[in-house]
Image (cartoon, rainbow, N blue to C red; front, side, top):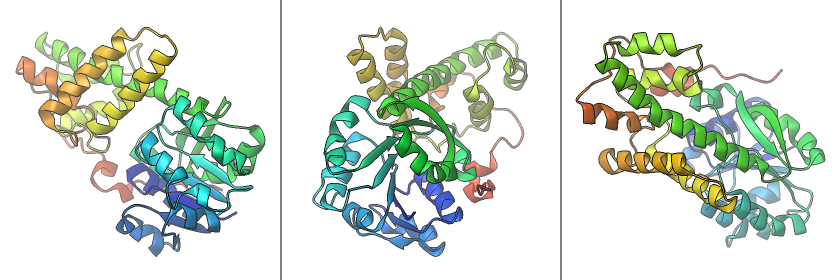
Length: 314
């Protein structure tokens, strides 16, 4: 199976490298050709457009910013629909709108395409290692056909029909963002009440308040860089999509709305490229408290991503 990969950013670029390492003949495309330098050096080919890519590939994988980018990939002047779609698989890893994508994908299906949505979670280090949890939606026959490609990038977690992967990813990110925002308040309160941040962190882990965010992201607050691998602009894009989904389903969203407001405040103050945990910096600054802890809290992947050893599927 020949694989075409569209979108070579921080997450997608590393996922594409694992596809190449797994032995798939691979062709890549990005808006910036320089983003493909490592992939071309690893033996991948280059496609000038999504059309060029799907004409060469049996399976297309995409990971881009959001819905508008996916619409352009599919329906643009040199989009996938202009190429040979019949029998081709399209696996999309993007965090996107399930309603939008279910409508958008109909033209691809009518041309004989096989769509799968497989948004990912974890973080950059998981993308590098190739063990990202992936929320996979689509027909079982399509997923089984694509399984070797998906498993080169991560772990399959089936969620039902096409579009459910986007749903799972959005509610996953809803909880992630709410917890990230709450951590800042809890840490500052504990610090002002007499518990040092590193002591607080150690006693929280393994208890009812523990989470991936607690384990993985709190050290970025200690370091003072707030995890720039996932910037605030992506947090706000996700929160907008989450709010749309909640409105569509008639779900109360007071906590999500408050979280969105807090992240918007952080972007207004620190800029859209500031790290996701800058939402906690707001609480530090308001309280006049710094949550710095002595020591080397810079995770190796945050400084040199290539130092996180990739996993090559057996």
